[in-house]
Figure 1 (cartoon, rainbow, N blue to C red):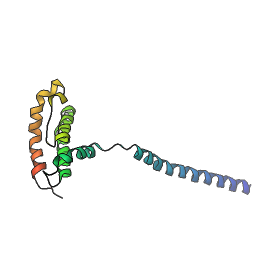
Figure 2: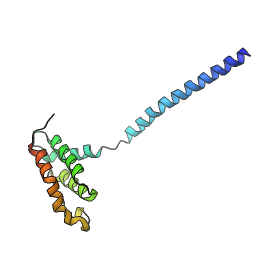
Figure 3: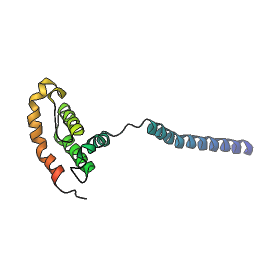
Figure 4: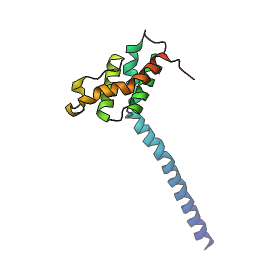
Amino acid sequence: MLLRICSAALLASLALVGSAQAQSQLPLESMQIRSLYRVPEPRDEFVRQCAPHMLGRWAHPEAVCGCLHDHAAATVDDPDLRQALLRGISETGVPTIETDWVPPSKQNEIGPTFTKIAKPTLQCMFEPISN
């Protein structure tokens, strides 16, 4: 009887250890798989595309691009206009929106979008970086 209880306890503890090891390996394995297929963050990709246009103009091109991205994302509510604005900045280094980048129904909002983003853009470009 004592042998059966000890055997059952041993089997139960082995099962628990095996289960704990499988659970601890699963997140690690899934993180490794995710890192293989890791898609760059949209902000990081934006800064990577934008920064070359800022070289020679600004002492900290990555900071200027990051600031422009953050203000555009926070200020422009409409997703089509925001995407067009971010595209223009990443391709030229300055806020730009081509009319064919937005649906015809929203093209009349391009001017007001520039008005919204004007002050934050100037702040990004001309105010010192605060740490």
